[in-house]
Each structure stands twice: as C-alpha cells, then as structure tokens.
Image (cartoon, rainbow, N blue to C red; front, side, top):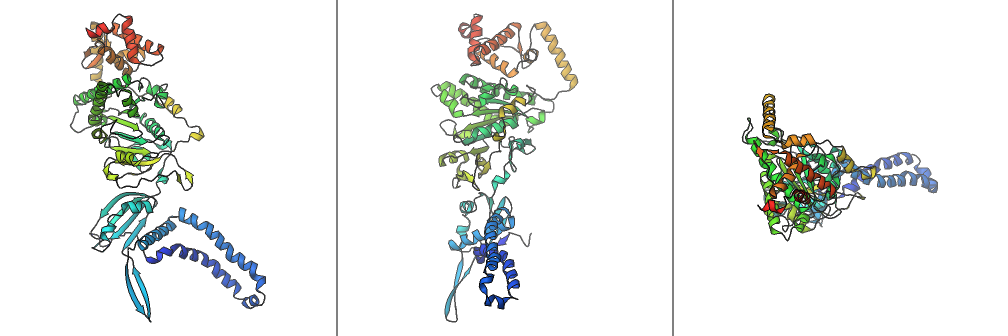
Length: 556
C-alpha cells in the first residue's frame, strides 16, 4: 500500500493569473537593473528628467515588447510553461463554473468572501495530461465524475480513460497528438503490429480486420495505399476495386500480378477463392505433425493474407438487383471475417461510411480496428465507433497552429474510446510515388509455406514425379512454375471452368492438370490479354466456345 501518490500540481486560485505573475517575474530583472542604474543619479534625474526619457523608454519598453513576443512561444514550446498554462486553464474552469466553497468574513467593518478550491491536481507530460478530482462525498462529486468530454474540449485533446481510487477520480487526456505523426517510410510491421503513429499500432492478429472510413478528399485512399505498401512486404494481398480507380492502377506491379479484381464476377470469384484458401490453410495446419490447439498461422510458417476492398458499397451497388449474388458475396465475406483470423486471413475495408445498408451491423461489429480520416457526420462516427463514443466530441479541425493538416481523423479498437489520429505523412511534393514503390517490391513466394522435413519433402517430390509419368498429368503448382504463371490466377480460371462443366481432379488435396487442361488455361490467358484484360469469365467462355464446349457442356 502506497502512503503517498504523486498526482501532480494542485490547482490554486492564484493560478488564474499565473501568466501575469510570470510576465512580471520575467520583467523584474530589467526593472531591478534600471533601479540600480538610476538610483545613484536620482537627483540629476529630478533636475533634468527629459534628458533621461529616451534611455528609460529603451530599458523599460524594449524588454516589455520582447517579452510579449517571446512569452507565447515559451508557452507553446517549453513543457514547464505548458504546465503553468494548464494550471491557469484549470483554475479558470473551477472558478467560472463555481466549483469552490466560499465563506464570508467580516474584518474591521468590511465584508470579504474567502474562496477555497477543492483538491484538483494536474500532471502534464509531453503527450499526456492527467487531471485528478477529489471525491469523498463533497458537493461536486456527481459533477466531477462526468467531466471527460468537457476536459477533452478544454485542453484540445482526447479523453482516453477514467479511473477511480478511494479518494479521487482521474482523467487521462491525450494531447499534442500531431507530434506522434510519422513519415510513410516508418510505417512498418513490428512485433507490436503495423505501426501507424509513434505510439499507435494495428496488431492484426489480436485485433483482426480493419475498417476505414472517410469522406471524399479526406485522405482515405492515401492511408489505404500506405497500409497496403507496408503489408505487401510481409504477406499476400488481394485488391478489390469495384470503382476501377486508384487500386486498379497498381495492376502493372509484379507483386499484384493476378491479385487485382475489378468486375463483380472477378470480385465474387476472389471471395470464393479466399474462402477455399482459408479452408486449405486450416486443413494444412491440422495435418501438421506439430499441430496444437491454440497455435496460429504464423507458428506454422504461413504468411498473412489480406483481402482489401476499396468501397464495398460500390460493389454492392453493382449487384443490388441480383439478390443471389448479394447473398453469395455476403456469405463468403462473413466466412472470412468470422473464421479467418486463426488461418491468417484478414479483411481491410475502406468506405465513406459503414452504412448498414451495405454491410450488416453484426458483421461490422467483427472489425476490431476502426479508423477514420477527414470529416464524417455524427451518424458516420456513430456507425464507426459505436455507443462507447456516443458522447464524444469529434472535432473538425483543418488547421493546427495555423497550418493546414491533411489525414487527420480518429482510431479505436471496437468498443473502446476513439483517439485522435494523424495518417503517416506522404511527401508527394518531394516526388514520392506509391506506384514506384510498389513496382520495386519483391514478389513473395506463393502457396503454403509450412515447413517440412527435407527428406519427407524429397520423397513427396519423387512420388509426384512418378505419378505424373504414369498418369500423364502434373501438379498445378508445377505447371505454374514451368510457365512462370501465378497460381492464384490459374485457380481463378479453374474455378470458372469448373462452373462451366470442366472439372479438375485433385491428387492428395492438390489440383492437377492434364495436357488438354493446360491448353485451356493458356488459351484463356491469351484471350484475356487480347480482350484488354477486362474479364476472366468472358475469356473462359470464349475459350470453351472455340473448343465447342460452351453452355452445352455446362448444362450436361
């Protein structure tokens, strides 16, 4: 048990005038110096005062002018002066709102009111402010326990937490958040997760799935690109851009070859393939010789997989008249969100606002990290951050310290209080280009990466080669490696061929292809390129039609 707890500096009545007191203290050396200088010549000064007026003005007025310029800078830059200013603000708040007790005293025939402030302490650091209010049944107790939103506005910070002990209630206010902003080059994945600010991380394993909200021009695309750039270095990413806008422009980057989906058919195919991949990951983990309940994907050597949507609402709008496709897409997305974490499958959705018309509320509640940039309406903030932030004052700030700021918003874990957020700074004015950065990224090895014993792996490879010779087919992964093609793209085409009556066999849960099927895959890719890379389903239909295997085959 602690006999004494340091809570900071106690607020007193005189702190209301602390700026005047400090100014006089700073000016006092000049006043004292003037006294020492002019006292010996006091008699001469009385005889001819006009002679000394210029020097008096110079040694008195000049320090006052200089201090009037320097003092605001001190209160803005120096922590000691910031603490004094915090005491001034708090004293003014208590007095203006009559948080004090008064006693009338009579002395020498005159009446005087004596004001006593309750025990209130402030403890200020560079990024944090702690304010403690005495309880103990005093008459202000009920008001003291409901000051979070008020303090947040008063100190231009973010109310983060409220704690109680036997005597006090303490408010934790985050301040000066812009100082925690980082450049895009420092957005990396650490052991704490994806670094978004100096002290803000997205731990996608313990806080699966990210929901990004923001109005037009608020910086939503920039923060999405920043996150994708960092995650592309450590995992696989599928990009779904139904608007055919910014993300679609990355299709030339090798790291996204076969991983960008635009049409509604391709996006639904992507969702279905990710569900299948998730199930394959679970099966691979469960069949691993070191399988243990509770271990996650990373402990089996699997890389994380991120499914990124830029404007899910735009995709739903494309299929709003097809209820079957809506149900199918929602079902696949639900499976990934509810079951994907343990297998290393995560969803990132960027929307102007997560309206229940486009994404079910129950599904939205499973996005454990929430982030906004730019301005939202009150209903938008309620959708993003829920009832825990219903009474929070979401401030609309475009300028800080007189400078225009882009990428400001809020961030929170689901069900927790939101805090001020500044998206990483991207130096576009210095020639920074996301496209150039993506073009330079190395392509990660595709497929499952569960470590195997070298001898066992060699035996499996030999068995696969024998099977290929005897049965005249080969593994899909071998075919992809031989032709330098992405397995992901080939699986997408196989899924479309299978839907149209052209099934593919499996050998020990691995897809295999015959020479004829290899021909179909290659022709489909050629047709896809010839048709301007518009639609895989159309390329598949053209390929089947060339071989007389159109709809008749699919309906057989």
